[in-house]
Length: 259
Image (cartoon, rainbow, N blue to C red):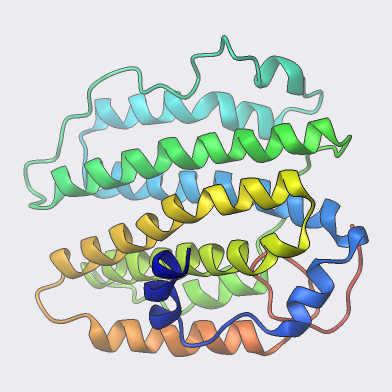
């Protein structure tokens, strides 16, 4: 695990504050963290899907991706959810029902498709895994609004291409790296089922951050080190500063309200 995490700690400018861990390990916070984690997995899949649709594929392929996401989005936004039916092992929902055609005018289409489709599939699967754990514990799924962390990172994204895409990929790298770091930090304080589950997520999250970073550098015509350093500083400030809301990616707890 330490070998896997070493690049993560090198990439991030700070570790999660002890105050966040102390709050997160309280039994009364588990429900809220699981709900937020579940939403984060779906949001990660949706974000990657948006990047593929916007930059890498033709319109018919975009419809194939939308069809892939539909069962998940229907579940999230429907009022009367049937968790058991959604989690049915007979479901074919996490299968891409067609071949994606790359845009010929974007040189990195194939690489973006390859890395992001794999990420989307894994994030959808993680969404289902967290949902199943919640369901087994009698925790009802509900939507969760974006926190200060994600908003703070996205405010720094430049508004002209290809800088917008490059910055979004770098942001994605930091989100995945921070997720990996927090899974590892939190796992020892959880019950055996959740500990085993969170440790099982480390390898894919670590690869996700590297995929985002490699794509950003491949697309950029210049070294992205300065932009990575910029976002590292922004991310560290968001993680270390006080945060009124308590979420999986929130900063140091200030006012904590259990969900």
